[in-house]
Amino acid sequence: MRTFQIKFYENRKIFFAISLGIMAIGLLFNIIFGVKLDINFKGGAMIKYSYSGSIDASTVTGVVEKTVNRSVSTGISQDIKSASGDQTLNNVTLTFAGTDSLTVDNQKAIQTALNKEYPNANFQIVESNSVNPTMGRSFFLKCLVAVLLAFLLLDFYIAVRFRKIGGTAAAVFAIVALLHDVAMVYFTFVIFRIALDANFIAVVLTILGYSLNDTIVVYDRIRENRRLLGLKAGYGTLVDTSINQTFTRSVYTAATTFMSVAVVFVVASFYHLTSVTTFALPMMIGVVSGAYSSICIAGPLYVMWEQRKVRSKAARLAAGPAGPKASEPVPAAQVPNENPEGKSGASAQPGKPKQSPKTKQNPKPRGKKRKR
Image 1 (cartoon, rainbow, N blue to C red):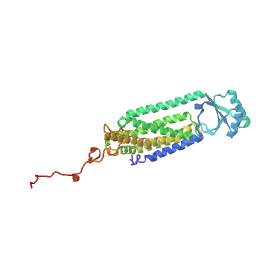
Image 2 (cartoon, helix red, strand yellow; image 1 turned 120 degrees about the horizontal axis):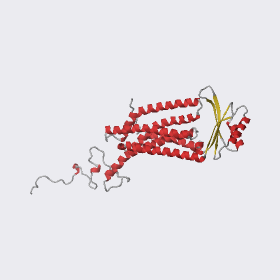
Image 3 (cartoon, one colour; image 1 turned 90 degrees about the vertical axis):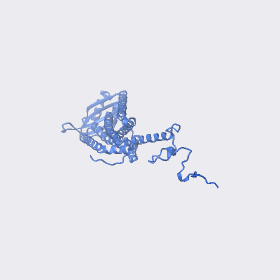
Image 4 (tube, rainbow, N blue to C red; image 1 turned 180 degrees about the vertical axis):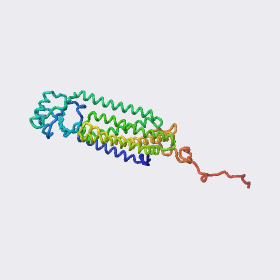
C-alpha cells in the first residue's frame, strides 16, 4: 500500500477546529429544536393505521385530539412496498405521550372518526403499543449503564495492552475519541430530527467497537515503531509515521464499510423502511467519524500529553532535589541544554560565572624573578 507523508500532529489545530465546529452546530440545533425521544424512553402509546388514498397530517391530528381529548403527534408513511414488491401501503402513526394508556374503545373511536372524515380511506389498525413512563425511564438508564460499562472495559483493555507506550494515557485519549464519535452520532439524530430510540443505542455500541478497532491499529503501529526507532525519535515523528503507515488501511476499511451501509440506506429508503433508515444514516456518519477520530484526534492528543510529560521531567531534573516542584514554573537557566556540546546551562555552577581563557586576570609569571 502507498505510504503518505501527512503531518497530522502539526495540523492538529485544524482537525480540532473541524470537530469543535461540527459539535457547535449540533449543539445549536439541540438548543433551538430540542431532542426527540421515542416512547421507548419517555413512555406513552403508539397506534398505527393503514389507509388508502391521500390524507392530511394536520387534519388527522385535529380529528384525533377532538376524539380522545389528548395531544397527539402524527406521522405519515406513504408507498411502503411489501416484501414481494407488488403492493404498496400507506400508514399513519399516532403517538401519545403521557402516563395514560389508550384503551381499545379509544382506538375504535379514533378509527371511526377517521373513517368518517375520510370515507374512502378505509382506516385499519395495524399495530398498537403502550409503554409505561417508568419502564421507559428504566430502559433508558439500563442503556446508559451498558454504554458506561463498555467504556470502562475498553479503557482497562487498552491500558493493559499498551502499557509500554503509556497505557493509561493511550486509554484516556482512545476514550476521548470514542466520546467524539458518540457526540457525532447524537448530533446526527438531533440535526435530522430522528427520535432517540433503541436504534441510537445500537448505533453507539456498534461505532464504539468499530472506532476502537481503528484506534488500536494505530496504537499497535506506534508500539512497534517505538521499538524500531528507539527513544531518540520524538513523539510527533513517531505518531505521524505510524498514522501514515496505517492511513491507507483505515481509509479503505472506512470506505468499504460506508458503502455497505449506504446500500442498506438506499434500499430501505426505496421501500420506505423508516426503522432501517434511522439506523443506517447515523451509522454512515459514525463510520466516517470513527476513522477521523482515530487518525486526527487520538494520535495528536497522545503526542501533546507525552511531550508535556517530557518537559515536566526535564524541569524536575534541572531543578534538582531542592528545586521547585514539577507543577511550578522552572527558570529557563535551569532547563538542561540540549546542545550536543553540553558545556553551558545546567553544567555551570550557580553563583560562579565561568571565565573564558582570554579574560583571565593576574596570570602568574613564569620563571624566577630577576634581582635588581
